[in-house]
Amino acid sequence: MAGPLDDIKVLEIANWIAAPSATALMADMGANVIKVEPPTGDTMRNKLRQPVWPEGVTPTDVTFQLDNRGKQSVAIDLRDERGIALVHRLALEADVLVTNLLPERLTRYGLGIEALRQEHPALVFALVSGQGSRGPEANKLAFDTTAFFGRGGVLSLIGEPGDPPHHPRPGQGDHPTGLALLVGILAALRVRDRTGQGQVVETALLRSAAWTIGVDVSAALVDHRQPGRRGRKQAVSPMNTRYECADGTWLIMSSHNQGVWPVFCEAVGRPDLVTDPRSATPVARFTNAEELVSILDEVFAAHPYEYWATRLADTGIIWSKVADLPTLVDDPQARAMGMFAEIEHPTSGRFETLEAPFTLSDSDVGVRGPAPDIGQDTDAVLLELGLSGDEVAALRAAGVVGRSVPTP
Image 1 (tube, helix red, strand yellow):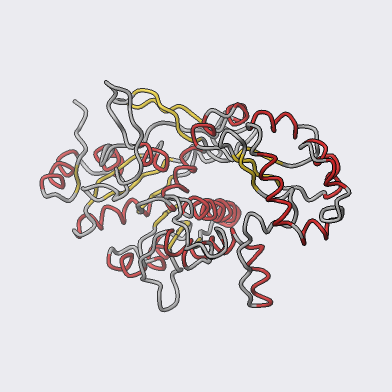
Image 2: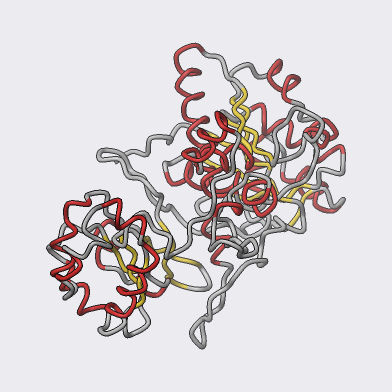
């Protein structure tokens, strides 16, 4: 099957996760993605959690692989005017330019949005930032820990009452931001195909943070109130919280149908709670939630997870194990869904990574290869751009480009 973006060329001038994650998904859909890196490489390389590799296997940076698979890499020094000129030429041949450079840096590097659009009206210019490209803080640096989780209000809602803010996991705010950017790019490409005109697509970590907690933000826009954190024992119902089983595994339950309470009580061996005044009605269960959760804590602590999985199977309760990551990556349902893909790496051999978080029934969406080494494709990309071998060699000797070694 053909990829839905087989005819699209993308120029990525970005680092870390949010913007590169969007272009990685475009590469999964067949786009030719050219990643511009400084000669020292994307600063994300080898910065995040790495696995323990089997003895004899050459390690590779799997977190970088995730967000840069299937791309080409050119190493160009944007501090040099000759490097800026090269990137400018590449931009004029692209369908989409994706960047997370701050506005002042885009101007400094001759990549200002309006100037490029005047030269290339069909260009889709996609920009991701921390706090947006307008306003007094347009040039303020940000990571997802600051703009998404901190300023975006997410951390204020997570955890038990009175807990200090929790530390988020790496990239947890970047990936939804990358998805938002991807949606905008695809919409802009559709408009371009109809009109011939490109446009500017923009999202920000702060903006996507508010969208992910939109249920709470939409209410705060009206009443300007902060919702209180709800503790585990302050549940709306004893069927809407978490319980620890005898083997240390946690269950999480979410039942909006309070009519299954009698079946639930029977399943957990406490039929007396059906008629107990403390729990006979939804209002009573809400009012006495802390006491009831404490009672059920003792119930669930008496047996391991597999016992409760069997008991809860036909109750109508919506529930799940709180899985650790080894359990997730071995989950038979995740495997059946095709959540993971194999990458064939030239030095590390085969290893698994995440597939795109969506599929298309009649188009090829999938990991097309490993992430490139720094500047792996510099020569090939610049030769295709029209430079001669001697010109590329001279630029390499001057330190303007680097890392690529011509094929003998």
